[in-house]
Length: 94
Image 1: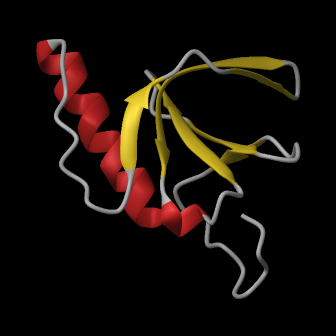
Image 2 (image 1 turned 180 degrees about the horizontal axis):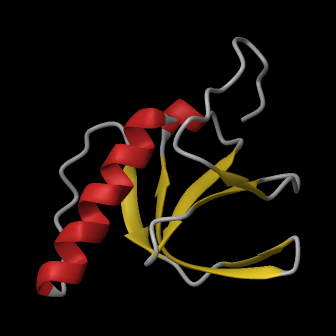
């Protein structure tokens, strides 16, 4: 999760500085997205997403332009992920 967060933040900074980004990661595929999450009455508009084998098809991690991270689970379970988040060991679920 932390590697994906770092990868997304680097792509976000590169995009905001120059209008494009390079997908440097070998672990995650970063692409544009238009996901919107409404959590606790707040709208989070995501514009970049990371997915890859590390997430074991459980979902995708997205970032907003305001550097908020949102997890979209494949079977529901959308949640805000703060910078101190640590995935539980062997849970099979982020």
